[in-house]
Length: 401
Image (cartoon, rainbow, N blue to C red; front, top):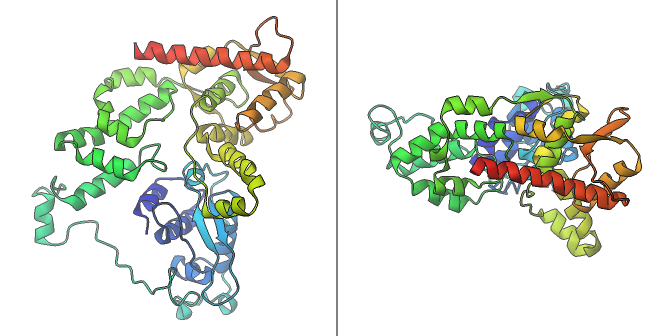
């Protein structure tokens, strides 16, 4: 059971209650790396009270969206269900296309969804080969001893290891690099804090994240680093946060949207790992390694840029920080399908950056202005990108000063 993944899922929008219910149930079978998921469809239908057809459809959607990776197909033998792993980077960066569930009808006679037939009929020895009876721990302390350890006022006692672990999990689930952080380092940094420091961390982290998002900075700082450096202590007062957070909404393919997308792509990519299935594919066909890594980086290396692309597909406006808007004023029109467009497309390919969606019939899109005196399109867009990134660095240095 991965409480870490489950707690993160409860705070996510997965596109509907049925999708979230199934994702949380799958996380109950996974380890903290998202691996080892192989309950049968009938078992999932019984435990979630969804029809088997709904379960099959959602599982198929999760695989198509890259949230789930098929490690081993079902053999058709009893107790041999398809095995999945979560792709945590893709899961935690997921943005649903539309909300609401399409529920497949329940056919009692053929699906085993009759309440009288409920039970673990498909996987009689359990997901991991043993029958498990899970007794969920109570949220509130039930005994006098537990209430005493939690504090006379009902608060969690500072010296209670279980209480400290719960608080860590709750705080950590809100941190943007949660899916890739080192658990041991994060826990050690948390336990090294004093009680007052932990309390201040919990209270001020939401304000810190709001300020960073409004300033246009990406969340590259690991949770353990944030805790160890006690970064929240350098947080500005809330009136200052309100000033910094005066970001505006801008439409996809506008200058601000284009500048924000390039700013996200200019950050370091998230650290990624191969799944067991991908390792096995590479072992059998080494020539596929570069293809697999490219696909993984394009889809999960820059999740914020991927979200901006999704917003463009759905024609949703996005919030752009003021300093990014200011930088974008120097952007120029680029003809869709023209030589400069193709040069930018090649630059994205060379860097494994996700390319923008087709611009819905627009004749032009926006990119950093090209320098004068350079005839080669590839060299021109390379220099334009460098000039744009220098402006981003100058902004960061001004903030630091």
